Image (cartoon, rainbow, N blue to C red; front, side, top):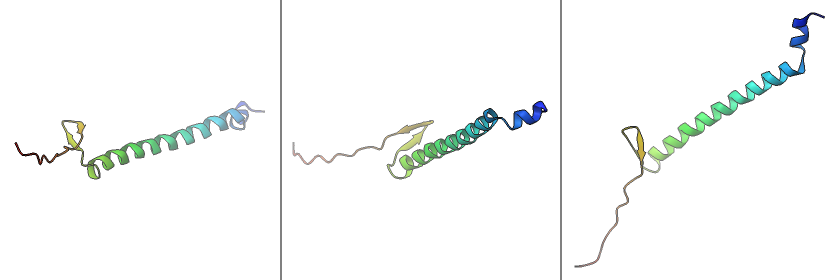
Length: 67
């Protein structure tokens, strides 16, 4: 047999290709999760994005005590 045919038909090559395929899918899902988490914080939780950092929203407190 030719060594090229042996390489293409080997189980090791199939495992490497499947691993790369599923690894790329996992990486893409991770990136989508990170983008979704960022957008969730910006639009839903009202975080501020200033100077390259996320800052939590201001909590306003109402003080009803009379001096």
